[in-house]
Length: 88
Image (cartoon, rainbow, N blue to C red):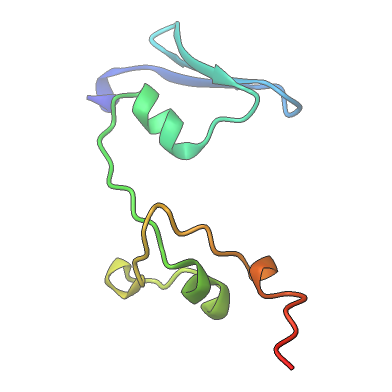
């Protein structure tokens, strides 16, 4: 359980971070993504990939998870895909 462990984050605010559990380094990188940190701590989580176009159009995630329009992990749509397209 996380409550029984001493979790310490070392961050020099520049280019290196580390996570220690009970004084032992469990993960380090230039920047630690949340999911990498959770995995290093052994915390189970669910990962959802929102539909990229939908998220761009609404501009933020909704308050309720059930309102997230789910896409897929391979959806790498970005607004740049549409910029410069001349349909005329």
